Length: 98
Image 1 (cartoon, one colour):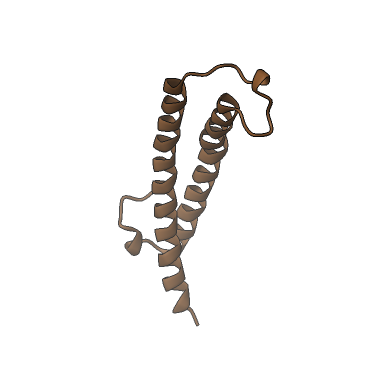
Image 2 (cartoon, one colour):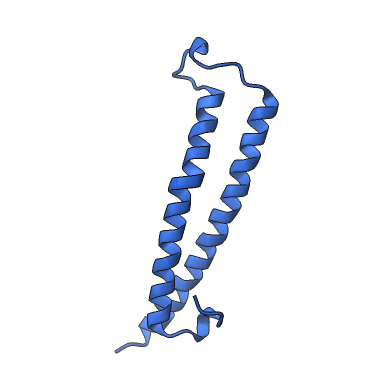
């Protein structure tokens, strides 16, 4: 993507950039974030899982997994904010099209 500020890009560059960011965010969520959350859910067990089906997992392990998920979420949030900025500029640009 271009090094220019989002506000100085052409509409074509904005749309292409937004598409790229959306795909990158979706891929990140599917391949990193959701698997980590599912792993935590499995490790911690759940209301619907009998205690004998979940192995004993230490609090430290749970905390480490949660910490990793929070780091992954920070990246997700940053990507989402970048994508939202693209959408705002695209909306502003397209409002002036007759």
